Structures are given as structure tokens and as C-alpha cells.
Length: 41
Image 1 (tube, rainbow, N blue to C red):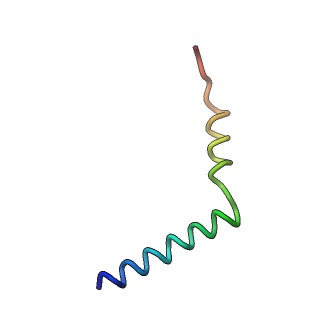
Image 2: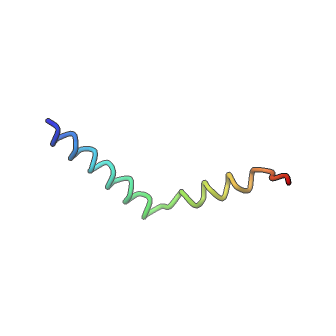
């Protein structure tokens, strides 16, 4: 049973990595948050 759980999780991880390669969103989200925050010194 553990093998089935590991295989399904690995397949999901590969799917997420593949999606991020095709349509990267990490940099977009970081830039959006960074530009929306006002920094004070």
C-alpha cells in the first residue's frame, strides 16, 4: 500500500513541475507581491 501512495504522490509532483515549466507562475507571483508592498526605512 505504501508503494501505491508514493507512486501517486510522485506522479502529482511531476505534474506540478511540468506545469511550472510550461507556464511559470512563481516569478510572476513574487513580482506582484513585491511591487504591492510599500517598504519604509
